[in-house]
Image (cartoon, rainbow, N blue to C red; front, side, top):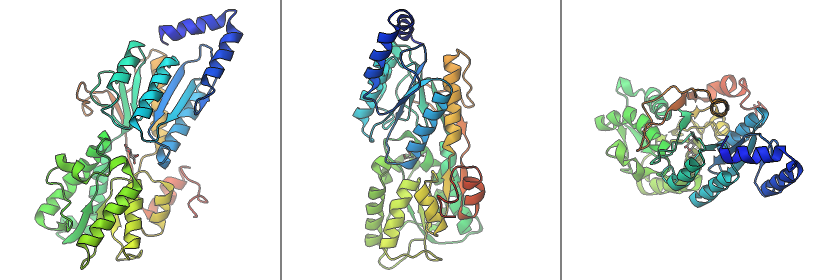
Length: 374
Ligand code: BGC
């Protein structure tokens, strides 16, 4: 606990207890959500999530809140509508409230330097959640799924399904990448492009729109700002209208499910119908709408990151920090944030196709069969 919070807790333990409790509760009454007790020695964990507009972040936040609340911590969970300034204000408020640990899924991984300086002044440890925070020394740990592997799994799936190693092709490919301000997006693209670009060079994959980055470092040229479905949809519509009047798309590299959803809508609008001529579309997250689309033949795969395991790992990290124990990590080389290599815990993502929706997503309890209409 920070010294300031300790002082507050000590005061609360004396005759001021009742008043302190009342003050704390009303102070926190305006928050989006909070659990646990207030005004006691209970550690406060600030959880900052990027947006409610994507299913996964709602699940992530709810799960973390439940785990940390269950472990006896007080939590404050805030969503920032994908607005960087809003996230910074929320973090500053958490610091002012005397948070003991901050768990942050950033919107723009390069924009949090000053607010993390403020956290460091109060000696508040920071865990980067899912997305690395760049250009700051005040990032203590990072917990995520192996982001490059997500892309590798997408690229390998495409190569395997199309028989590229056996020389098949040419196939028409349209590649997409994630939000340029999200540090993960480059890793996703790199993983996939390292597998696919040799086939582009050999001519087995052709990109009629010309939107094939010359190198991995040019990935932002095809990035979709804010990971927005609507933006991916209009980009796909433009490509279809401009470059596919006399040909068909065979495969779309989509880095995640929110983009895939927009792309699938554009394909439907462009006259494609599920069946053999529907392009192979990739994804990530196993969002409910996309799993339903997989079952309806509109998406070939998704890379599932069981966010419950990420939450479990982060809750363990929080516990280890609060207890003053060594924090468990399994990667100390990959995630250089520009100032330091952030000690990380990487989890394993896995491929889900229509064939294993039941065995992976339903049997594990991630979704009920009813929810997916099974
Ligand atoms: C996450 C993905 C998610 C994307 C859009 C990425 O940082 O790792 O799981 O699909 O953001 O929210």
